[in-house]
Amino acid sequence: MANTPYDLIVIGSGPGGYVCAIRAAQLGLKTALVEKDKTFGGTCLNVGCIPSKALLHASELYEQAGHTFAKMGIAVGAPKLDLAAMMTFKDEGVDGNVKGVAFLLKKNKVDTFQGVGRIAASGKVEVKGADGKAQMLDTKAIVIATGSDVARLPGISIDEKRVVSSTGALVLDKVPAKLLVIGAGVIGLELGSVWRRLGAEVLVVEFLDRILPGMDNEVCRQFQRLLEKQGITFKLSAKVAAVDTSGNRLKAKVEPASGGAAEVIEADVVLMAVGRVPYSNGLGLDEAGVKKDNRGRVVVDGHFATNVSGIYAIGDVIAGPMLAHKAEDEGVAVAEIIAGQAGHVNYDVIPNVVYTYPEIASVGKSEEELKSAGVSYNVGKFPFTANGRAKVNLQTEGFVKILAEAKTDRVLGVHIVGPDAGNMIAEAAVAMEFGAAAEDIARTCHAHPTLTEAVKEAALAVGKRSIHM
Ligand code: FAD
Ligand code: NAI
Image (tube, rainbow, N blue to C red; front, top):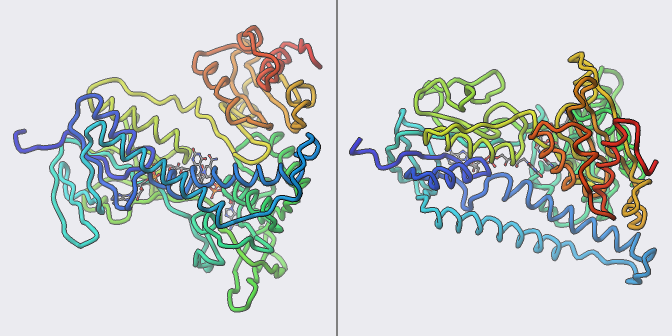
């Protein structure tokens, strides 16, 4: 079509959208990216993965300086917190990352538009800038990558000062004496850990009878014990029904999940971390006839295509785990599909990491999932107490667990609680992507002394032949 300036317009510049735009441009598609916010990178770079990891890193070092440096012969005295400087460190990290995305988009010759994108019709995207001026762009294909937003509880309003979402919890200007976290999911435990390390008393109220729903039970039980040892307290099978903000301190009404007498718990800050919901406000999906499911997620087929020809969707706005790397891989796959190639995402091998101390990392199936699917499996486990490097580093909490199919020895799931678990899980993901057996990992030479030897030993343990246990 002579009047079609773009092959592809991507709406939303999070890890799904910007990666999709870059891959499409690499493949020779004339590509534009529309972003409503001032900076690129979406939730992940601006108010998600990157700032939270900066605070997790800094607060972990603060904790180590106070607790473990002396044991290693480093005398620094009691560390002093300069919260404003820590926030600047975090903000500079975010700034460097979002500028990096802007640089990559320019380098790959992706045209960028700042404003709210709306699908005016198949092949037409309207971009409305902050000044209210709108322009219409023509395109052959559209990818919706508008991500997600904070889920809210009825009757509790977020002011981002005292009742905060993750966004407000990343910019508190003082350490709350008491932080009440609603939800023992990833955000609650990561940001709860940050503020506990910096001096807050932290109570986590969770609706279910366990933390981190969906992750392997054994891992979560041990992890909860470790967090409790660090000073975080949990109230499981409970819910926050209301938060009274009228006084100097917040008063949260906490009830048993199954109903019953409520108690009032005072706190200085309440963090609402009960999940995220797909975001498609103002996109014009209903007018364009794009189908959503009952949870507001855009419905796509195995090729990320919606029911409307030429409109695709990826990332948090569609079904699946709300993870940056899942969004990125979908961005690459959909760009390749639009360019006529065979893009694909293997949803069986998407790692999941909780960046607390110790870290939790998993890939593949949990024991509970294998049991309920009726799959026979063998378990190999190895504790970090028996790993030389962990011992010498005074980081012996946790273990590696490998689940392998009984008949074929094929690795079906790997679960790690331990220092640096997030980096170590990559080995398991590569092995599983190549259909490895536990025997393959067990026979692969692992450098000594490293924490990764625990992965090898867990693989040996599947065949009941660990050496160091
Ligand atoms: P998003 O990153 O949400 O990006 C969507 C973009 O679309 C936004 O920039 C938005 O402004 C823009 N947009 C929306 N509507 C329009 C419109 N109409 N026009 C123009 N632009 C629009 N995941 C991990 O894998 N690891 C982590 O460590 C991790 N940590 C997290 C920590 C926190 C506190 C939070 C909140 C999330 C975290 N996540 C993490 C999840 C991760 O951020 C998301 O899974 C990821 O950002 C999803 O990417 P996306 O591209 O689908 O959407
Ligand atoms: P989540 O889904 O991980 O956890 C929410 C928790 O809140 C659940 O345990 C749930 O049972 C509980 N809950 C729900 N309603 C409740 C109520 N009324 N009272 C008490 N508890 C209640 O959601 P979270 O932590 O908000 O994170 C959102 C998403 O962001 C996650 O899906 C995750 O994928 C992503 N994320 C990923 C990170 C990572 O990869 N390290 C870090 C942070 C977020």
